Length: 117
Image (cartoon, rainbow, N blue to C red):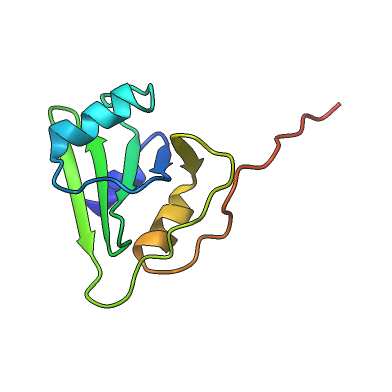
């Protein structure tokens, strides 16, 4: 399962807490409606509850959705705080692994991309 998570095209983190009574269909609807993304593209969508002790990761896996669910028994996930960001932010697979391991992510906000002249 985890190996399939690392094969995703991209990882998107939802910065606002989500009502975790939502199942796969509810989370896929958020991805499509609120984020304007296609949930069938094979990308990972990461959600957190308001207490920051549960994470859900949604991914389309060839013939159906996969939902990874992780709950911390003690403490909270080090969920980043974003400024002036709406919807989702693209993070690296390394940052996702750090987040799932309970570590602090290295980068909290997007940076400018520079082009070589």
